[in-house]
Image 1 (spheres, one colour):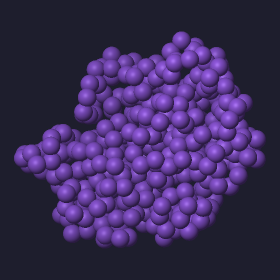
Image 2: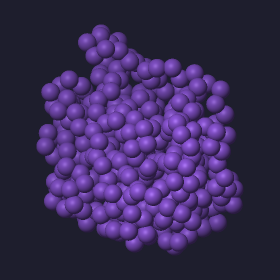
Image 3: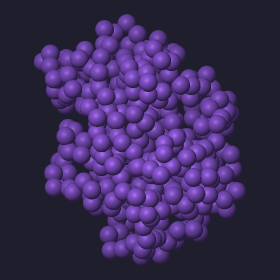
Length: 391
């Protein structure tokens, strides 16, 4: 399946900083969002958080003139989302579908400022498993980290491509051969659940795929970047009222994050060490595990070998074509709970309303332009085609 969704010109991406404060979720005056104390960052112990952590570890925030506390690690997406909504974090990474849910169902004034990374996830199975493709998932139990995740979107795309049906049932329930049962597990719990045969596979961000490979002889059935070429996964988000009151701070923070992404591309080995418990200890994993994440897959591990995709990549610009495709796919993805808010959501308007990209564009200009991250035609550097191929 190829999706050709084109974005508009670069000029149309630049937006005004004027934001209505009528939709405040947290009670109180908008003045409460003016930043005087250090910037607070939250994250999960996954490589999706790399730009935030590297920007802090290398002192880029400080060099840009932003006072930032050491990022705070939490265990689950639920805790991270609740902490953000309770104003405990000013800036964080988040699975792309979560801010869609926040803004359009919960009416939280959240904005996506940039992509944190591309690719970075995989569908992992036991090494002795007979699961080699999506068609082998019939009758199986597969864990995802959140209903509102790229992982849930991508796994269901793969399941349906083979004529199978994604379902949500209690794990002991009997499954038909054409059904694939999906359940929520927190990322740290997935490798042991796989080892203990409580699940047949899981799709999640690294390093939990690499950890299972190294420690439990697990096998990557498919890298997500090998399904949707250079797809976004986590994004950088902030409350738009906070943005409105702290535009200078947000711009400086985005400058640091974009610099960090550029550094990660040039220094994959050093990135693994800095993040690891052998380095600055942002992630509770040894350097050996993280190095595996930042190494590119071998060609024999990829179905689409000509794509030359990275296991995890870094490109901060939020291409509108990807945002639109995510919103469209969310309308076809089953989750627990009410999703009526998606039914009448205008995809183009919602995508434009969700994303605030003026800060990342300015940061890109300051660091040499998007071509530091993108090898396409400079004339169409802010436009791309979304390519999905499920074999």
